[in-house]
Amino acid sequence: MNPQQKRNFIIIWFANLLVAGTTTMIMPFLSLYIETMGNFTESYVQKWAGLIFGATFVSAFLMSPIWGRVADKYGYKPILIINGFGISISIFFMGHVQSVEQFFLLRLFMGIVTGFIPTSLAFISRQTPKEVAGKTLGTLQMGSVTGTLFGPVIGGLLADEFGFQYTFIITSISIATAALLIIFGVREIQKVKKKDSIVYSRIAVLKGIFHHRLLFNVMMITSLIQIGNFSIQPLLSLYVSDLTTSGQVAFLAGLTFSAAGVGNLLFARFWGRLGDQIGYEKVLTILLAIAVIFIIPQAFVTSLWQLMGLRLLFGIAVGGLIPTTTALIRREAPIDIQGEVMGYNTSFRFLGNIIGPTFGGIVSGFIGISSVFYVTGSLFLIAFFILKRTRKYPKQHLEDILES
Picture 1 (tube, one colour):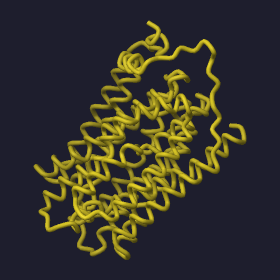
Picture 2 (cartoon, rainbow, N blue to C red):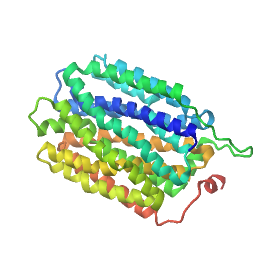
Picture 3 (cartoon, rainbow, N blue to C red):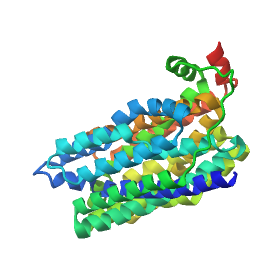
Picture 4 (cartoon, rainbow, N blue to C red):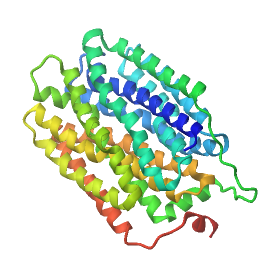
């Protein structure tokens, strides 16, 4: 990296720390916040927790390829700024809602400008040599993971001490600060396009992805990973409340969220570096197997410390999944359409975010919260076998598919 690239990396690392930390501050008490809006049944709260959590990703799913195509033309910096201030404004108003429906609509609106962290991954990926992409993206992931680690704990403490509205305001200010860091600190180094480079239509790029076995299957795996991750998150505070008699449920839920973050933080860079050395496909296969091993036992815990321990071990695998898939797609995508291809990958990621909370809410509503762990654990197993089968096929080049 040259000095400007290093400066960009450091600033975006800290911006990710702020965004991930503050947005996860509200996650431990999402269900509890809904309960303050009326006298609702537990099943009603569980259903709306899933819907509200997933609402943001519905509009984000539709917008990601559009933002990616804009990034290929105008750069990633403007999109990061729009995302930052858009999320900040949305979260500020969430602290003043009067009904569950208003909360849902604001989360849906926020999805239009959601994608700060995936966009920052694409920004750094585009400016990083392919041979060290895994290590660099793994290191960048540590910024968002560090935020995820401390965010839920701080959010839980603030909610217990000062109330939910105050926590939303702090979150809004912190994300606006991240956007200001991007404005004044980051200078995007634009890649010079060749004069004879081909401009592909959105339909052509989409068809190319669907015909590229590795790209399409990795994007499908990205969805399955997110379903597995997000199916339990909106329900975790309720699960924690069943395992403890303490009055500080929001704080303990925050600690439980953060346990997975510790595993993320310790191993994200390691998995990225290993992917650079032995291949991203191999590392992704290993990580999916580890995820299966440690997510299913979470259904059978009888105490909170057991759940925290398993979340820590599960986090070891999760910490490498997103950087590895991002590095793999960066390796396969031509530079002229890299933003758009990354955008489609982000859409698949958000698709998992949409399905996950709703799926988790439905499963928990019918057969209990604990069952969500072993039901979604099977999704990681499916992803494992998809990747294992894909690796047996001959290698394809996306440029060849696009030009055929």
